[in-house]
Image 1: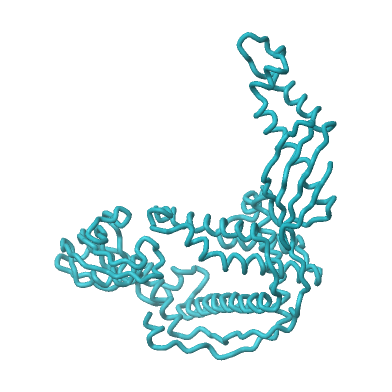
Image 2: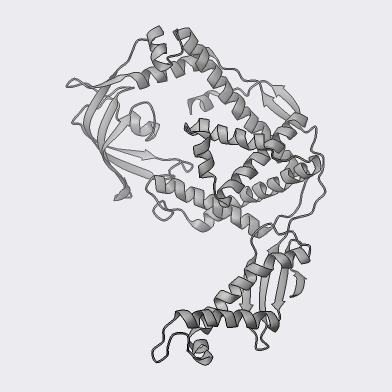
Length: 440
């Protein structure tokens, strides 16, 4: 095997790999012999088809399959021989069988960037000191009370109020045209939950069963549903039914219904307080990690392989597409320009790729590795989150393409735990919300 390496850029190498005639001829002969035994051509007995006839009919197929097999069998040997460290699958730009009987293919290889890790211990970050207040606990209690309530059909003439449930038909119009994706019949609107947007619900308050109405809503540019973002939509709404909530009393029996192991309402409140505090602490930990990664990326400027960035962008697009599908939408129906989306995600993808290289460099220097107990904890966490057994979780991670991202996530978490332990974390008062922020 002959290998010629050209440096295309700092992180890209072009490998031209040539396999000699002595390797190629037997492989092609074996492939033709296999086809001779398997195919049937008019006028020839199976296994007795002349080589010239086989080549005339199956040359493209044989060369394509044999060439692909050669690439799979020799690529990793080639990069190992040249002491390259690829970070993503190569791009095979060509493969051919020249007249001299050899086989030649070209692989564009992106390699791991080399950089000297700057300071990563003692990084200064801020962490707000946040505690759960009584108002937040009471809000959670009221939500539980709401969820435990019974629904009954409202009396005739009852007007829709907060906490009621309205059953409606609606059709959205944009520039006078009906939007086929913004349409539903017998749709349940839980007044106060804002699942269809706060303004949509507020327009229903004061109406009663049998009412029909028409109103316009202007959606902000950053509205989560891309189909509605930045648009003026006129809604035609028909109220079909209204149900009211009959809420249970907030007492010790209520607490037992929510959590049988609890005895009093006071215990339920304390349980809620602990849960909310953990959620806040987890969110703050994520914020600390973001600060650490931002600082590390600032301190360690280096180029990243573009093919790896493109791969990360494609993964992000897949996730967006899956989210849209769950809402019955596609990129096209949601009015999303793919080229714009790619460019919007590029900077995020570069940071993700760069951050992963930095974390792995820290792991290399500090010899941070994944242990069996780390994996078991990861399985248990998923099992707890989705109410599964650990064995059920393990079954999901059978294949290599499923276990590798999971292992990488666990490894990065362990590295971040180390960086957090080494960081200089300064506790600061929480940022006070302005009246306008609180209202929004």
